Amino acid sequence: MPEEVEKLREQYPEAQIDLWSQDEHRIGLKPILRRVWARKGSRVQAVVRPRYQWMYLYGFVQPQSGATSWALLPTVNTPAFSLALASFAQEQGVGPHKHILLVLDQAGWHKSAGLQIPEGVHLLFLPPHSPELQPAERLWPLTNEPLANRIFRSLDEL
Image 1 (cartoon, rainbow, N blue to C red):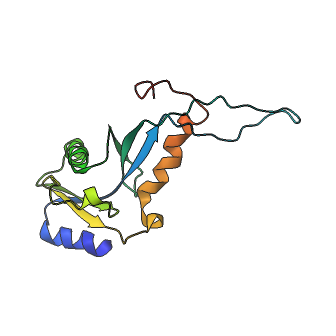
Image 2: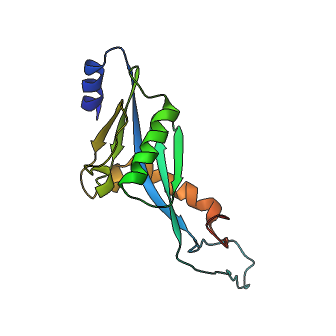
């Protein structure tokens, strides 16, 4: 990755170059169960109401600073990812004087011919099947925690 950042610095010497990482995470009405502390000998029961409705959290993280940006969308596909990219680029002020190198996995919608990539956003793909290299993967345990051991009646409530 340092080589890619250097290439961008050479190509855009007057611009600020930032490195970010992005991934998607499915959240929904299927409960996330966690262990809990209880008195010895007592039996803890978790009330669940599993349903299979989902939405997707698009997470962007800057590994050096820990800064994050989020988009919550109903699906993962090329138009939804294009929307998430556009929102992220606008939020970060991407343009002629600020460029972002965005590290991604190789999901189909990340590489689609129909993907609309905002000016100033440059995509860098990780090797296939390498989630351990993806800094954004570390976001998901944190985002699951407030949802654990809770029941939501609808996606709106979630």
